[in-house]
View 1: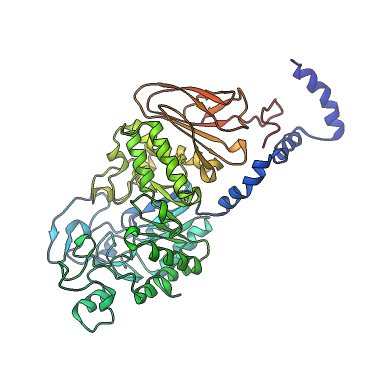
View 2: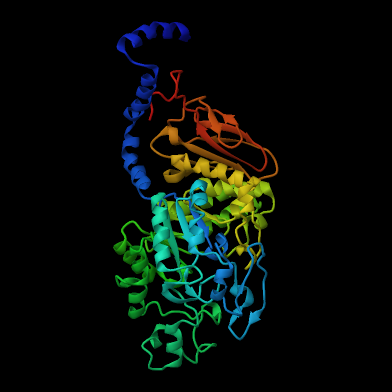
Length: 540
């Protein structure tokens, strides 16, 4: 039956006027009534999404920074005394280059090349991180150490003087908290630096109280056990109760002390080497010191049994699936099955707290790994739409490049922010989509059946939140039919693509699509918020 909307409205206007109800009030009533249309499944699921939204660890956007390389210091010359020879302090525009092994100090020369960034200079760039959309600032190690990367701690309780002091850490945490952001530090507790006082005393003094804090003996090639036999990285005996006490168990331990200083969590280096039991104890200690804090483990393995020993992982497994998909090594359907199995095995909530990165300080830069822009952008779409916390490595958003260590650890290119690059504009678009869509942060994950594409939905208890992602990683257009797997998605109601302005319509729960080559769609139901006809008027 067809009716005249104009006649209907003319009939209604006097009634609305007499009732004293403005048109804006009508719209508000329509919006408010959505909650009244929740079905039994919506009501059952709603507390889950509310709990996830209340947990800052779920679906957060993480921005990763190497302090030495992020923001140039206010006065470079005033800091030169902090870098005694053979250390070198470079100008900000100098690119890192691989050096030679320095036997006299036991490190590579590029490990002691510095650029002078510190915690105070970092604080001057917090506006940028906030405007970019970051919820969490993650710092590579800041503890007192000999090298620039600082994975060779000399004293966990001190901050490297090139960076600042514990007071600077507190000030940074305060600055972030006023912006609604969080601070996560890098904890390197599997090993220390060979110059650490604990280790030198243990090595030189058989009666040292620290002797059994390390693995020392003739059975080791170096006279002590070192991580991957790297001379500068003697391993801690982390299962020693005395070591546990100083690292995480005591109230004034490293882990608990920094949390009480205002830090919000820890990312644990080589967490797979610490083992399940130590990780569980450390995580519980962190939660005692600061309820709601986060412990993220660097896990390159399959992730399932690492929960609940830790809150989340660096999700290298999902990263590998993404990279293989866009490189043509996996079909879309196969990638979908692998991702679905991961979520099934791990549970969604641990995956929502896990960090999904495409590159970081240990890998080549994204633009170097994937020089093809189409492949790179597909990978980034998946990073920002799959469940988890997108972990953005500083400089990737402006198209910085770099192969292996130390090239991928170059100083931040601020001129590419001042004159925004195409990469920065693209990343900001993805960040905006991520921030403005609840389902991408806390929604469930469902793979949609397809033969050639990768397709999945992120959904909550509200149809207005629904996101369907469809990716064609091939070099040809692909036509396929997908079940929408959502009972509230109305027949012939438009779904709009947030990236490419495409529009599709479901027919009886089936989406028939033709996706161009190397293209991703992020589809969302078109919700009519005016007084015009809305197909979603009686569903939440």
